[in-house]
Length: 243
Image 1 (cartoon, rainbow, N blue to C red):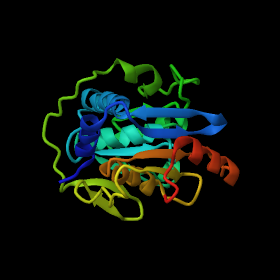
Image 2 (image 1 turned 120 degrees about the vertical axis):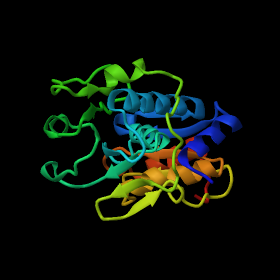
Image 3 (image 1 turned 180 degrees about the vertical axis):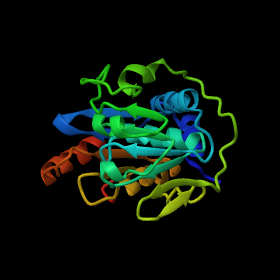
Image 4 (image 1 turned 45 degrees about the vertical axis):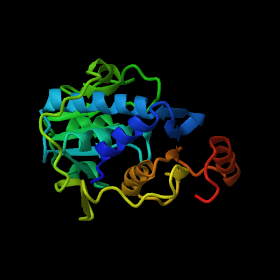
């Protein structure tokens, strides 16, 4: 049975230093994560959820980050690793669903949320603290995430039949059916978050690519890149021409 945690373990066993996620963001930001580095981010995020929120199987985690941002990848993997349910929504601030944890990049959302654990994420790659005024009783991811442990001990096994991802259109996936069919083995695939690809697909698609032993190039700049720029990125990153 293949779950997100199984996939990450397989990547670590196969080649821990091979790039598995390469992200292009605004202002030509480029982030590259090997399986080992990705696992470290996931482990620290999972430990934060466990230690600060006692998050466990069946608890809900609302992810409110820019679509296709690399930080959303490790927070989703951390959520699934400890057996919690990731919640995606496009609702306005006043209509956000009640969840056990809120992970957001918007200070006003963190301030108004009633979630027991609220985490404010700074999207910028090199941020060491949130650049503005922090809302009361909200955790600053940029300042605090690095302080959590590099070894993860999950209290209970992840139950793959439970709901792992749910959206406000009523669709949901269990841990068993979260991973889509893998493309050809070992390929490097480009995903463009600036197109009409859904936020859900942008979290699920990498799982299928990694399950096939491949790697992901993700572009998410906030506005569509010219076709010539996309072609340059695909060529420079060795994206499979068939993908």
